Image (cartoon, rainbow, N blue to C red; front, side):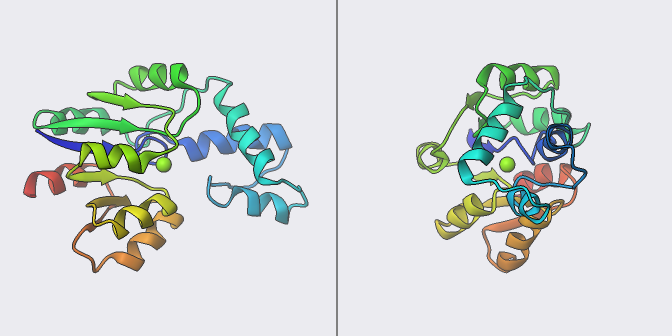
Length: 189
Ligand SMILES: [Mg+2]
């Protein structure tokens, strides 16, 4: 069986919106954040934050044991279909393992392995040699594309759409609007 690597936040679970809600309460500011331009937007609003502060806020949020909702209600069913013929390896940077396990269970997300928290995703990817990686982090995507891995990128977020548009002519780069397109991509390959 082939291995398929899934990221969680921004792919399966709606981290961005849940984090926004937390930040709105915490800073009493009504801004639309995503995890990749959060710091910039806070600075524009006169909130000085360094990288450590930002790291603390992510951890703080993750330690409230949030139940982060699915990005699409069809995700569990589609992942079950993918798992009929592939191993699903979930690799996540999320810091709160117990919360992550419970959240994925509550959302009925199937997987063969969960690596979390993971700060060296590329090392695991070298071991698992996945046929596809579903990822939204711009930095990680650049690294994966550079190393000739097949990536499937959500076009939903501006930050990942930018990476997709930059590399879409490459044969190892695919984009999707709807989650079921991931299944179609894996089947036809
Ligand atoms: Mg992500």
